[in-house]
Image (cartoon, rainbow, N blue to C red):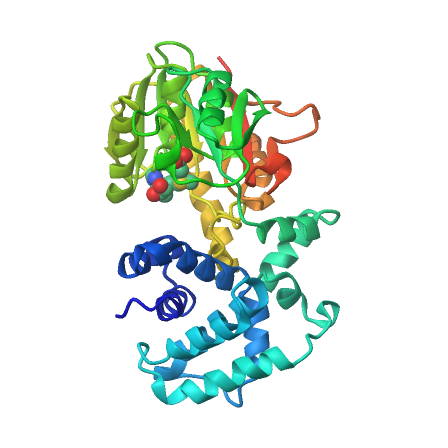
Length: 427
Ligand SMILES: C[S@@+](CC[C@H](N)C(=O)[O-])C[C@H]1O[C@@H](n2cnc3c(N)ncnc32)[C@H](O)[C@@H]1O
């Protein structure tokens, strides 16, 4: 494969959209083939096309005589790449057009050069249809099933949720308070010329004005700071681990929350499990960088053959979920997730919850978390669990005593969409 950025982008998007592969795996593979200077451009194009997929598909449909299929299918994605640049990027039109047309050759679509050129030129000539005339999936760039679920759950806020999902996500930092106070680290950032603000949540944290490479963050290699969204950081504080607690982080990989809990209470005896070996290796990498220690077990949390029978004081269940709260970070979720997935995920979540509840000490705390905005995975899940588990008591997190848990919506205070429910096991 050549180093041509547009060709690499078209292939990467083809692999995500048509082959159902994940963008967070496909993009680094494409970037490894590109010249280093093109890495950011490749990322911008791939993320952008996947964010605006229905709208760009709509544009292409109106400009090609017949859909590109089979071996020519990759040229369809090259057209999307071309139109995305013309619509959303500051690349001069003639450069975007010429560069896109010349990507046809490395994609073995040289014979379609003229057609690609014509379609992009016609796109520049045409006037855009008014957005309100378009069907909702095209207007909002989300799948119809998801729009319907969000409308039903948040009749007042559905449009702002969908538009937050289209934003580029901000970069949050979690300061390792074993090394620096947040205020202290903020000074180091200012000295390094990194613009940011301190956000007061359950505790204070840092929001950067624009993302930077981690290598620019003071003390990153030494474990003084980590990158973690503000919403995900709430888990460590909500769990409120005490010195020497025996803690289970179930579904732990890549270990962001495991490490935060240990930073807040280093004497915690931490067991972190995950079903995926490969992802568990990332937990170890994070622990090593931060100088922390945990027992890692590769295991399925719906079973208990891995458990030695000793009860835990606190359990964090960051459950496998639809990830519909982090669409702005992973726009491919919109196309990889299917409506049917939600029921099967909800089933696994309830199964894990019931299984690990037996591992919690009387008086102990279980924090249930998802990065989902769908009530089926969140509030409804906890309601079902409470109805079937008389010894479980819900601890309020928000000021509204009627809330079942805490639903954070995407872009609330700049955070990702997340859900937390805190349960105590009665003695
Ligand atoms: C939302 S992610 C966890 C993120 C992690 N807590 C963090 O903060 O970095 C969910 C994890 O659950 C794991 N998982 C999925 N099904 C599981 C199961 N049945 N048992 C254990 N882990 C599971 C996945 O491999 C994935 O790493």
